[in-house]
Image (cartoon, rainbow, N blue to C red):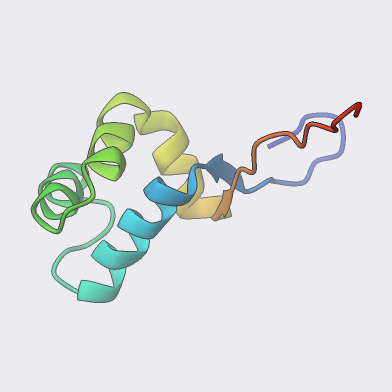
Length: 81
């Protein structure tokens, strides 16, 4: 939540992380609040980046469960040619 405007903001994650989290939620195999099970399922389903991210960023993961997740796009660089 941004203290300046009182609104919450979606948590930015890489496309790989979001794909893994989506796969876990769509599987219906666990409650997404069970972080250990989310990590295990993400890893077993072939999304190790998502498993790692949930383990190392638990506060952001919790915020994303409340406020949502969005893909963080890398900055666009402009060619000077």
